[in-house]
Image 1 (cartoon, one colour):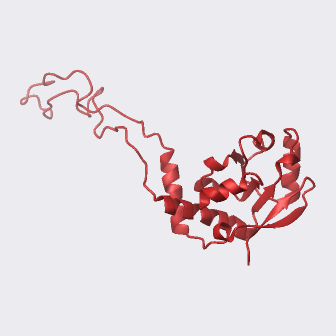
Image 2 (cartoon, rainbow, N blue to C red):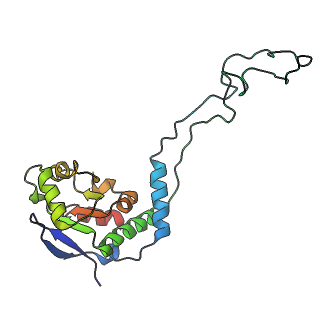
Image 3 (cartoon, rainbow, N blue to C red):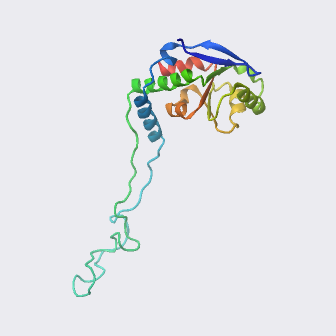
Length: 207
């Protein structure tokens, strides 16, 4: 059966539109989706944390007390971690959390996410001309009439600012451009809304 999406009108009416089966009708591969989401989430981590080791803190040039005869454990420097002001035992240092994922696997994961939405009927298309001016009220009414469930990801072009401004203030709704669409966002969303003009760019990104 050919994959389809609902084209929504201003009153919540739906019209079925055929989709590219090579993108929206593929076999879903959960393992690739998992790898892609892990890579994307790790890529957002800054990894800039750092703390000082015993070699970085000041002081401690001489032994704090002599080796024997005090009844205390031997100590060579107050830079050691057990002393107040000493360095951290296993000091953190900046690192990269990036995970490598092949480009083909990344695109296959995106196709799997899009195909899952198409198969579940949670993918909808809208026309940008429904929003002659920014209106959160119109966007909320459109979502309510269509029966789409939050969280929602709306994909629109940068020049379709009226669409972005209309949807961005809705709760549990994210607005992204086709170039910013990630597998993690597709998986997070229970409903995916794409403008007709943005659909070809989403398809190109997934091919």
